[in-house]
Length: 538
Image (cartoon, rainbow, N blue to C red; front, side):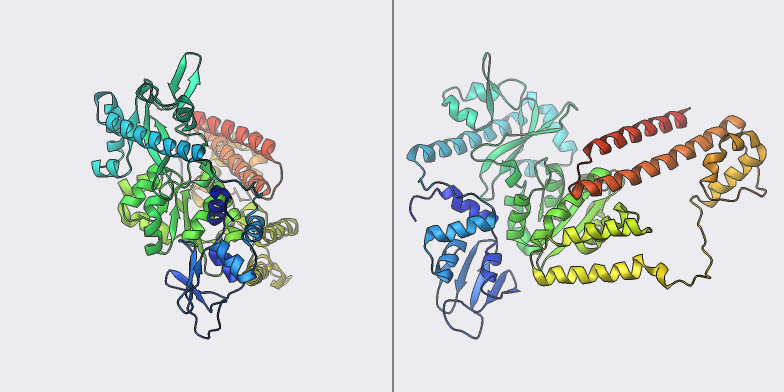
């Protein structure tokens, strides 16, 4: 139907998987990069109907039928254009827009935006190699970027002055403002990015639509991005996707890391299928775009609590995108490092091992339930089971959902309910919560400084150890002995707080409003860590 804003039909094609739409009518089997089935438009016994997920089209080599998701719905259901896109809009969760064509002014305006942004990128690239950009060039080279990498990714430098506002004085101000490069202040136009290392953000077609600027003086936030514009929507844009697209096909997967420098270094050091969100949490739009390229995704996050939280969110979003051909995994970089640091210090082999050791989604979700709830108790097991059921319910493939249910039912029976198989006369052995070295140190303190042991008797009783016996002289004076016990007590307190925080995070992922409780716990954790650090430094 002529007159429909093409932005909306493009949005439908971006949000919806043609494999999902076609497979409602045609059973499909993946062979190579395409999906195959028997053509719904003519009778055949040997599949000649091909569907390409990435390019978003189907083609029958028997009868010649060819098209996209819109034409497929029109032809297969014998409906008109408006009915087809109304049905697809409902599937995509989009509101139908008014039917109106782009005006010549709108087309011209968008072309102007692309031209301004591209010219700005050239200005930033030039400034990086000038004298006032020397510190930015030194920084990016220190991070392991060669001149070829700088050129490929069009990295530049935004100086402290208003270089864009001054350079584009003859450009219509409203158009310049609409790109997000400048803002209007009390004294006129000024640059949004100043003294920043500039990373251009490309759309899937390889056009620059925005920028991400990194601070060079240690100020926060570390990165700032162009605000959303007509051309750029952060929640729908994945950094590096234009470079990674072909590699994703070749590798039969994508790798998702947390930052753009990580993504670039991964792409240039053996993992060209790597992408990253733009300083924001993953969204359904990000996952939808990746799944259209390939449903095999490995998420690689930092091993800290923030990385674990990001992984849990990614897992939650992925559930509705899972198909029987999906291979979704979670890898973690430990030791306070990120992929960039691993590649620089340990090389590609070490990074490959991290990726190869990634945990499958089915195991990650199971581990999440076990870590988030006390499954040694009936109440905890009930909470964990409800958590798993809530996540599994999001899987749209009925058969796959059933398989997940059977898998977790089996694990719950074999791992959570082993106690049912134990005989009543089997003695219960309570394992100590500390190692042998710590136990011997506490025995020494108890024997030599009984007054200290008496002072901290309540805490020592919680450790479930026998403090009777003789051990070698530990050469600890009274002050060091008390410091040791206080330090151990603080460590145990921190362990307890971290367990409580994990439980709250899982509740938050389940929809509970526990932000205030998490903030309160974070304050307690921060205070306890400060006390421990002061104690250690004494």
